Amino acid sequence: MMNYLQRIGRSLMLPVAVLPAAAILMGIGYWIDPTGWGAENSVAAFLIKAGSSIIDNLPILFAVGVALGMAKQKDGSAALAGLVAFLVITTILSTDSVAMLKGIKAGDVNPAFEKIKNPFVGILSGLVASMMYNRFSHVKLPDALAFFSGKRLVPIMSAVSMLVVSLVMLFVWPAIFTALVSFGEAISKMGFAGAGLYGFFNRLLIPTGLHHALNSVFWFDVAGINDIGNFWAGKGTKGVTGMYQAGYFPVMMFGLPAAALAMYHTAKTKQKKQVASLMLAAGFASFFTGVTEPLEFSFMFAAPALYVVHAVLTGISLAIASLFHWTAGFGFSAGFIDFVLSSRLPLANKPYMLIVQGLVFAVIYYFLFRFLITKFNLSTPGRSEEAEAADAAEPTAAGNDRFAIMAARIYEGLGGDENVTSVDNCVTRLRVEVKDMDTVDKEKIKSTGVPGINVVGPHSIQVIVGTSVQFVADEIDKIRK
Image (cartoon, rainbow, N blue to C red; front, side, top):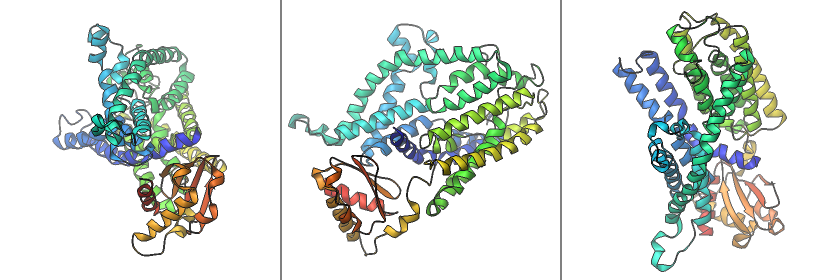
């Protein structure tokens, strides 16, 4: 299970890598026009729309990225299937479609279906598409249907599969959504402890998209709280209104960037440059704009226990800010831009103390993340591979033949077609599933010059190749075809 979650985490790295730039564009645009969101400034509108074109379509990016990353081969048909799967479920479960299916008015449809385009559905679509690719990409249909054989069959089967998933979600999704709204209304009566619980579950539900259900209770006028609207309108009680927003500032401006620094410092030496580029951009986006998805999704699935720790710390932050009545608010997210803009509003109460709290949380995040990552060898970015040994595996011969020769010998050592059931690769290693581990000739594989072999299960073996692993994997794919 843990290995499966880590594979999902690695699959998300492709779409996550583009998010920081989009977040920064939106943040700058919002800075230029904080009230009109582009309506009063064409430059702001240009930047906001450019950034939102990516941020607002995050679920689609996840559907494509997960489908591509979880498929046995990195093939375009898998990515297309992910998109098809996402389009099927989000179209069937859109508000208008649900109204037709149930024979009711659109206004009577459960509000849950307004949030069907969420990261959870995107990831679910990608997973279904990858399973369809792994199962049907080599299936040969009868001659009359031969055109639809193999990879062309994958998007079709993905669409069919999502019909079943959509039917299940038609009943499950609103029930879960409604239950969370009721839960949010209950904890809203618990004072600062309720604020802490809200913060904890808000982060915990981010990967499912169900955090919107909780947010609607506290931020908007679902249960009469309307924390965001009242704070910016100056309606409410100083030191109380804003309590469901203020505690995010110490986490997003200080805690998560400090966590990014910890992940950089604990990355393998050979991968530090790669990790630094991601963490610097994601950390800056978190601090400046309050958009945390690039950071959170970088370790959410690869190290889920660490993400739970982050959720707990977020809850503690909201509880502390609420307990001491330190308030600030946001219209976009809890980043530097909104902090500056909201700190002079009438209901802002000692917002400078959130900076002090943030500095303390930065220390906590950094040292706690660093300790947990190294103590439990968590697979945060830059740690999932034996990067220290990667360079030793670089082939020294010239031309593409070196990879073909190396691949042929490794594949033979693995037992060939009769023993190998699947071959995948990540940054520096081949990940192989075999029928019989006893058939594997480890010495033959090592004779190619690879720096290491790692047996991770009765049928799973990893061959550490180095940064040229993609070329070796491509050659193995040619052999298997």
